[in-house]
Image (tube, rainbow, N blue to C red; front, side, top):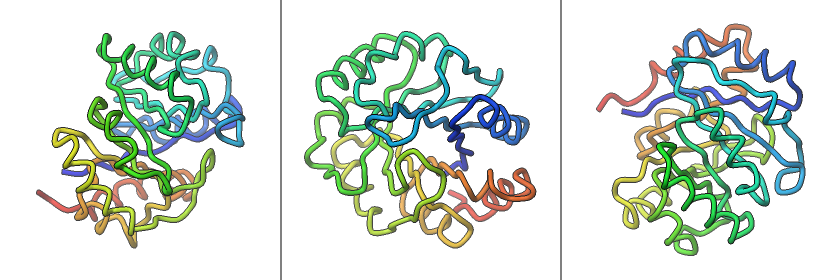
Length: 212
């Protein structure tokens, strides 16, 4: 069954804490976006100052040009998974994924909307998770281009065991179609974080998922 995962996309520690505290008490899993200001236009707080809530599965999506330079610090946070961008520096991605394979932390890869599954076959085959990115890099919001669902089958053909995620524009109008389309992990930012009652918004979205 698909799972709704609140997203944290913060630009300072105060906002990071605020967003985290809004969801950590009810979310089973949380997705954290980190940006370097190079690959992504925005910059997230220093990794040294971040924290993850105990007892919650946390995935970290690193929108970095050279992700391997930060892996040691990220591993100290004990995340469930670290997701790299397929379009970042190729050698750095290789070092990062192969390094993660030697740990208990899962390795994920994210594909921007224009990136072809076929061009990233080796990386997808090696990764535990492939994230279809339809959002606005480094920001909450964006729109969900449902045409990108065609990538689900393409990914499964390469790696049948891969967990498939989606990031960008998920809301009450499209979440069921995304779930039906084969998305396992539905990362939701603004439709939870920017509402008057994040917990109620989360539970409402969960109620719309396809029951397998």
